[in-house]
Image (tube, rainbow, N blue to C red; front, side, top):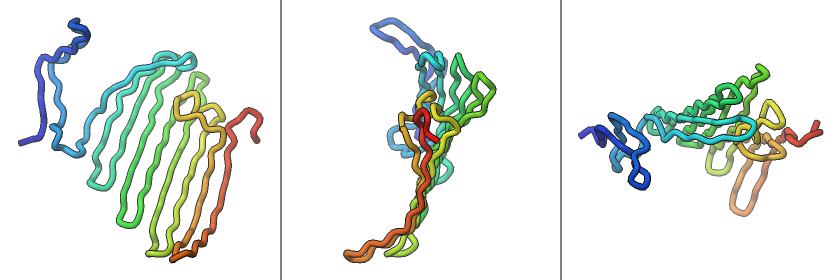
Length: 180
């Protein structure tokens, strides 16, 4: 009825040896398309950050939008909060990825990656890709990619039969050492 599968006294075994125990565990049954709740935690590490643990939470806001919050903790740095927001509209979509942290030098660092696409009618649409990082090494250091340049673009474009017209505005952020 509730579309939930529940377990009591759960043991996780590896090669017949018990390695983890939980007195209670539940998850949606396979017929559930989306449900709010915690996602699988992860653990990893790097020489810069030390041991990194993360426990994401998925929030099913409504049938057209959701948010994943991913707090993580690194043993050599402070906590980091990453988020991913997705929203689908009748005439377009919006995706937003952000993160923020206060590092060991008490500097606030973060990044944003956003994308929006919106149809105005059958011919015209507008959109944007807005990307930025607070520091040149932030994305690589915290595992958000290895880009050398972040591009921000705002555009207005039209398609009709074999014709195409576009107006674009660009901004660039170089992430290489020495980029100005």
